[in-house]
Length: 607
Ligand code: M6R
Image 1 (tube, rainbow, N blue to C red):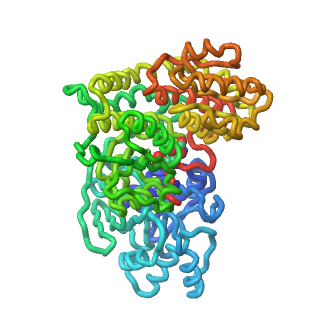
Image 2: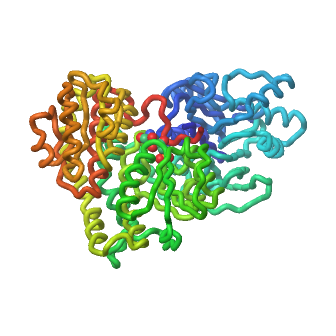
Image 3: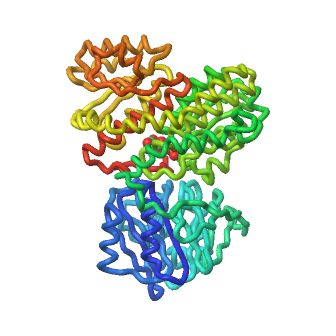
């Protein structure tokens, strides 16, 4: 998704803007640009494609000045091109924008009627034209922005600079995240704290509707009614060294291998060693009486929710519905009075999930969120925040964020079950011990890394792959298919194994790869029948199971990945690792851009 960065200080802006943009690359983008003020005049450089193209252009025509704004663009309105890239400008104002201006069409017509010309296909271009129009009418820069903000509909995070004003940078947010920061005599803004980490650790996330006036070392914040407000600043602890992939070829590979540690960190967040029990962050009485839970999320986070349903219904005995946020937000479901809704999001900024959360809040639901970015909007708008401890995830394809979401949700289920008296002490101790064994088991699976390379080379040649699983392996089949699609661009379908004969079986022909996620356990025999059915139609069976499962089906298998024996409770968490490795090595074999796959954004902050 688009990323913005801006700074005003006393040293050259251009190289630092590019450094900030590099730290926003992980969000996904297809063009980039910066603007600075030199001798009071706006200078702009933009390029299509990766940041390296922008750097080449800057080398040819350097930009001077100590104030500037920068942007990575993920195309929504208008193709990726230099003309559509940000910053957009007039001779008096330059703007970078993340979000969508929904009333751009009417604003554009109004401005055109006033004689303003448009050169891009973007919705964003109306912003500098509108501000310019107001400046022409005699508004001062700050007043012009305050007035323009009231006329914009939709979502935005903005960075704005003005010709002739070398000490004035304005930021604004509505719907899209924006953080501000300062250090000595410099001030900064960016889509996230990570982009600002080389310049300052002292940051504040703006609240919805806020806008900020930044001057060297001084920040002032105003709310949506233009009242001066004070916002809390905090110290971030982001690691500066993102260039290092710790010896791995890609961030995704590094993040897959970080899982034993981050699973442990996440468990430690909820496990109280003195009590030998798992606890929720707030001791919340209402959860005891919970008679239905709505879980809402998008993409991989939605699959974490689907998995959690097996635990929450099976262990805590709470009826649970799981929905995709982009549908839930428009369903207008009749939610139970004083019910609870749980939202899952790595970024905590996904537009649809956030809108669904706000809908649930408007229906008097108690809001629980499982988020990785604890400063995010979702975290700030929730009653109970359950952090995942994945650390920053740079690869666009979610890996460690997913497994730590699962661990968090597994802890939630245990604590909820105890609160509701749905679990015996003995069973609670058993499940907790099983969770505790996960980091070590994850390390064992990762140690078999090499065995995924060979089959991935084979998979990289195929056109379609089916992923099948039953019970809590079903969401992992969905996640496996999503991972493969995202980074290798191979068509893949995830299905509940029992549904295969109701349709997808028609896809199977000789040698079609069908990946079964089938730990031995209560549902194994049923899945084994589906494996028989697929094999009978010539499928290349790739089985992910334990020794017992593999031995039982030896005759039918093209290739098997042997997993450690594991309790059914945590099997979906552990069985995620092989499907991540399969997708990863297949993508590497195909030579795709693993960390920044085409068309994808890390955090989808538009509808
Ligand atoms: O930040 P979120 O967890 O809310 O993001 C949701 C999805 O956009 C995300 O999981 C997406 O599906 C990933 N690219 C999956 O790898």
